[in-house]
Length: 231
Image (cartoon, rainbow, N blue to C red):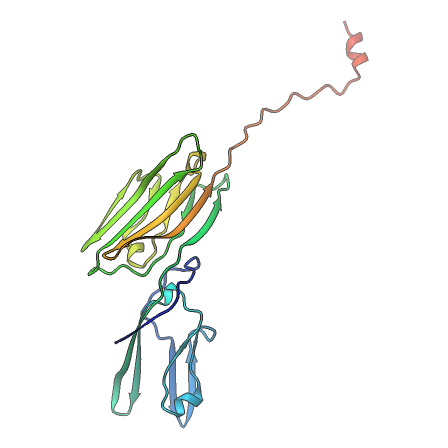
């Protein structure tokens, strides 16, 4: 198996997807028929196929493209795998800012990595630094350890959440419920493996102060002279 690495790329658009999919399929019965799952992302040409070059081009790789790619060839004798390539796209630190709407009862702080594998030790921690300089709050609000099994520790289960299922897919995003002004600040997504720790996401959250204005008393629409003359 060969390994291909690409420079880091943004993970902000990563979504939960199934990894085991067919991305290119080619049939030759006198003529070539090429079907691509995404023409802007994967490519193979008829000219190269005629020369026995079955290589596939992958454009603009992101972290969601990390995984194993196999090249299958079917003939009248049956199917065989002739190539297996492991692709690794490392995550860069992604930065985002969320301004909470007063109507929102929850927000999601995005963070993505490669899917967690059960045979590798993994660590995750979400840390919070308050934007209120007078309070100087900095603490860990979620910590996850995977050493065979996944163990999740939350500082407040009713306020912060992350699930085991999403971790297995590489979705390390954290849910924040009922945000208040005290939740304003910077959240960092820190991941660790056997080789050490690194920050892969930083999210700035701003919860505006709710302005409770006291309605002003409406002034009388009558001229003051009329009011003054009434005894």
